[in-house]
Length: 205
Image: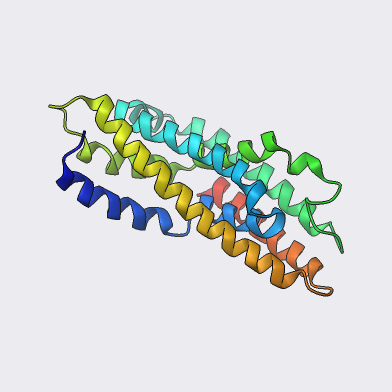
């Protein structure tokens, strides 16, 4: 169990970092706007699993080895980015209908949403670099590492979940506003554009 003084510093530090707009938060907002918060929860599951893997790997030192082989990241980044761009293009082509809501289950089935979140979390080099720089200083090697990691990981999971829910809920409100009258087409284009930007961001960052 980490010291209370350590937790008092770690909790607000990670909260402010987590709530800052990034690829995962932008993806949560985009999906919340286009398919609703409930279905966006599946993407969040994938993202949380990815973040947990990154955090554990950072503490165990695996991340430092992977960062020496950037080609691994390049493959994941380009594949994940291309996939998100593909989804964004489908939204743009969806004219007057609700994009990826009616008749387009290939993009909104649970496995697809989970994979979107997982790939975005795993293929984000900044996420790896952040975990490598943030977590180790909060680990006391004189105490059981496993216990400390479980506590810190629990805080990370709760903070990430709350942040993504906040972004997804904001996206849902925007969706309700834009879906009035003939604004569905604009909603599709905005959501599609955001998805394309996230994909490009993921590939080039």
